[in-house]
Length: 323
Image (cartoon, rainbow, N blue to C red; front, side):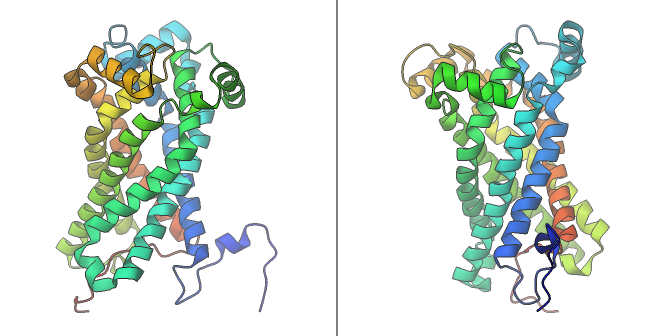
């Protein structure tokens, strides 16, 4: 057997025929997920800075997305829009690794366990279950990085980068400080990811069905277009569902937010102060723009990177379909 010794060559090697969904496939899925999440979240960092500021101080930042950007640049300079970029790019690489890689793993294992026919009739449930499991694991790793990012955005003087922020938060709040937002991050990310993958999968499947084609019958550019279109729809749906918890997550990481007491008591205090309608609506439009763009980009980049790594992405298959 010929062995390649070039660094990274194993990851770049095509998956062997007949064993597409082996360990190497999952590693490729995880790598593609890490890359797509890091790129998209990093690119939208300025939007996220404005969104977080609007959620933290809606009285001051009350002129929308563009107005908020202008206000921050005028007061603090253009570099303020890149606050938390290091934590964002690294944190979402780690999260994307476990999220996309995990969804592929749990999805394929469910199909192997249930069989193609039963899996086809239960594909939405599989999407929801696989994404919930993958996101829970991913959030264990994401939460500390998100805590540092939000603290640095709410207080630009807090730290000079990711490592400095970690050190200062650890000294000030201990390990528990990194997980102050774990419950709201789960409440935000798990429904968000479930909606994202289930809606994207359903919309993409509907688009393929309307053409009477499967992904392998279409060109790479057509498949990419379907990934982007279904990603936009999924992103907007996911943003609306997860927005109240996203607002709580932004506020709970602000120093002194919610007063004293347990995490649940603090979250309840914040919810009462803000009000249900405001939790659901403040900052929603910029978040829909951000998440719609981001999700479309993620699925587009994921599919592109998977192809570049020589992996054929798993798609649900109707075993009764005539070819």
